[in-house]
Amino acid sequence: MAAWNGTIRVWRDVSVAADAIGRELSVVCDEPGVLHEEMTLGLAGPEGRVDLRVRVLESQPQVVDGIVRHRLRLLMLDAATT
Image (cartoon, rainbow, N blue to C red; front, top):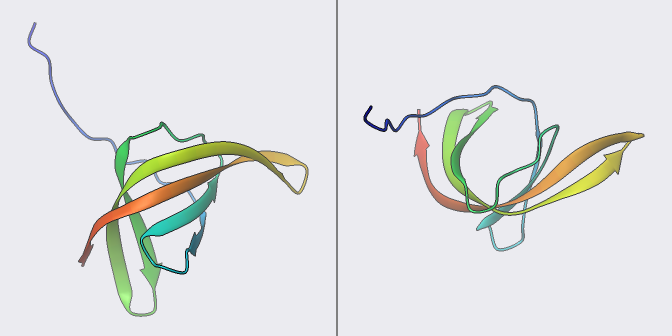
């Protein structure tokens, strides 16, 4: 059987903050990240939607309001406005 490559899109609500330089994002979400994994982060705002291509640099558990969440440090690779 041949190996297949594919993508999966998972819709999750996350909290996003940008660093001062603008190349990294900090995201707090329910699931841990996989180190070096590349994914698309879709951001929606009043100007429309922006899909950011990002790579996971770090994933650390964090307690938020008594619930274990995960803080992901992401490197932005490129962006495409839709």
